[in-house]
Image 1 (cartoon, rainbow, N blue to C red):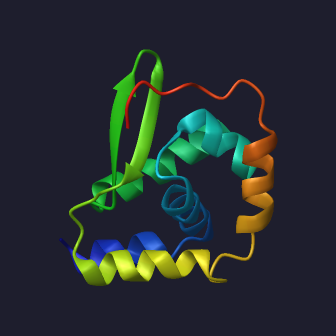
Image 2: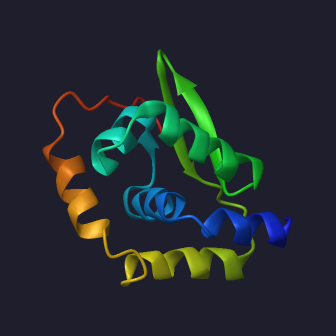
Image 3: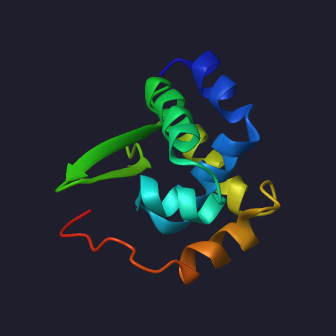
Length: 112
């Protein structure tokens, strides 16, 4: 793991919000992230690309959906740091989760 890329990825507020949602929910598709963050798909996809290039998230395709999750094999210290995002490091998380839960038409998953 490249620690410089990891910390560079965390430097952006939108990426921290994405990571907080992924840590909280386990796996989300791009459409769920756009709904939760109330932002446009190209911007969310660009941030997901940065997170993927940094080795923090991984993606899988299911039909027409792209699902993202935090890489399970990250070093323990990085996972512990990401967990802190749920404990006040991302002040928008509560409202992001509220929008996510209220989102209609969320995709169903076969397997995570």
